Length: 305
Image 1: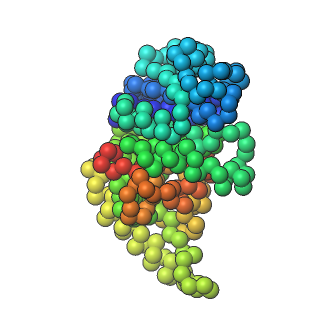
Image 2: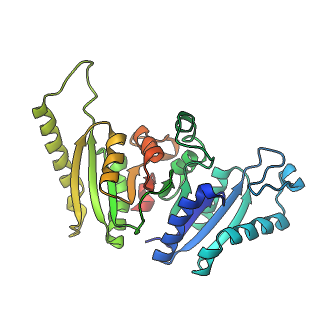
């Protein structure tokens, strides 16, 4: 399913979780894994390895410095490099999102894996306000392929993959994300969880839905899932359908944790606009920031189909 995978990394402990997923996927699918380290030179003498470089001051990355960086990466990922010949290390200088996207196009990759945040800090208010909208968002909204984002330390043992959550709001974007999810579940032999969070908090102020109304809405949502997705499974029967009521991102995160899922798949956005112009949907953004599972953001239906 994956012939070429691109791992965008800072080659620091902050990217260890993303790297673990990427290396495991490379081995499972015997794919070519491109490990890309991009230097954004906004400070005159900054390098992730704590070295000062006159070439960086001039914003020029010569071959000698690139070779030094790659040697550092070889040391950091030495254990992983012992097990396979399918890993290529690359170092670039420039704006990270542009270089990541350029590499994805040049190599025609099937998947991008990256962390949501590279700074050493917890999940605090500042991070929740600032992380989405930077490199991660720019890559996710313009990527020519699915993007798997690992935001927080993993609390599960990945089996690549055993339990996959497909979150849908029945939008056109969600429908377009389904082929990738279905194909991955089949090839990985995973259980596929169809999940819809029924947001009962919309409506007129003070309006309270009766339980009978909520039950009817849940039943209708299950019928939608059966009609839209189950009919396309082609004999695949390792699935279940769940509809919960509540705030969507809260319920998705809770459900994934309860089921010990190892991947959440969501559409990049749900508005009917060009994906490259869309910002992260609020639900996808909040799930990325809170989930302890990798989150796959799908924005390019023609490619993933």
